[in-house]
Length: 154
Image (cartoon, rainbow, N blue to C red; front, side, top):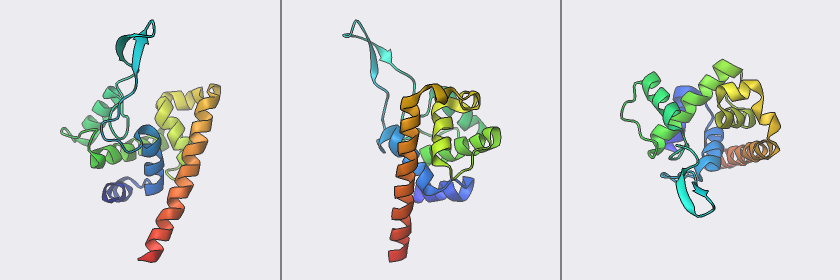
């Protein structure tokens, strides 16, 4: 929670949006990786992508983040760094594509498709991805309600 709150203070991305996106990407598993690809169904041919860690950040995007923020030693398997990455990425989505920081559905679509893919509307040709984005949005609403209930009990 401290990592998500720090990211909200720094970047303005609500905790529930970060949590819903991270849940979809890695189920909060620090060393999550994409599945292997197989040739002929049995011969391992590497992974589907370089996505790794809590945020499932790709190698190139993670390198861009480290350069842009000066965080040379940031690691994708550290939740504080992964949530900060999400904050940075989502603020970039706002500036490049006009997506509000509290719009979990559209932020997720831009996160999945990349800024250029989102601006081209590539997600519109992927009904499965639109369904996933709807689930991310619903999960964000659930997390938001839970966070309000938790703070009311304090």
